[in-house]
Amino acid sequence: MYKIISLEHEILLHPRYFGPNLLNTVKQKLFTEVEGTCTGKYGFVIAVTTIDNIGAGVIQPGRGFVLYPVKYKAIVFRPFKGEVVDAVVTQVNKVGLFTEIGPMSCFISRHSIPSEMEFDPNSNPPCYKTTDEVRSKTCSLLNSGGLVVILLTEYLVNTTLGYMSSY
Image (cartoon, rainbow, N blue to C red; front, side):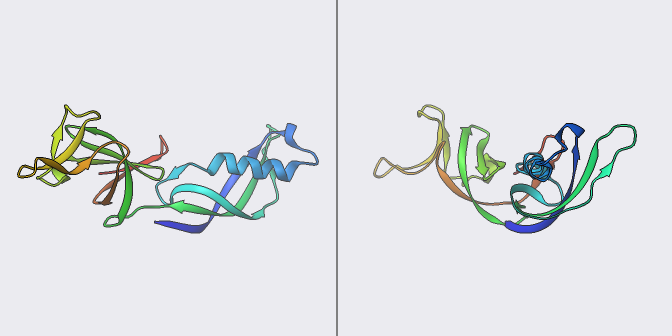
């Protein structure tokens, strides 16, 4: 689910950036450091929408760096168990499907794919498909680039690598 929430972040700035463009440098560094990151608590930070406050900088003793506390609002993507989402299929193999839900990667096990769909390794690209034997014609197909609607049952957050995945 996408939300706009208030967040805080500290920007550590080298003395070479002190000067007339100091506030613009703090803003640009905020965008660079937080957009596209993933936290376990809030999810993916998609974009910073507004900067509410850039606090007074605190000089780091013995280093000359300054630490600026920044309060801002951002659009975040935080999925939850039981949420139904649209996903794009990125890879198909005999163990299941790999999909992307915005910035999140998702694996769908073959055990979660309807039993009437079978993996066809001979098709190009490989896919899961159902076949109506009476008409000898494909009725349904899951392959790379296709869209699927999925129910999130579990997810894993790995903040050290900066990603969130579900299964």
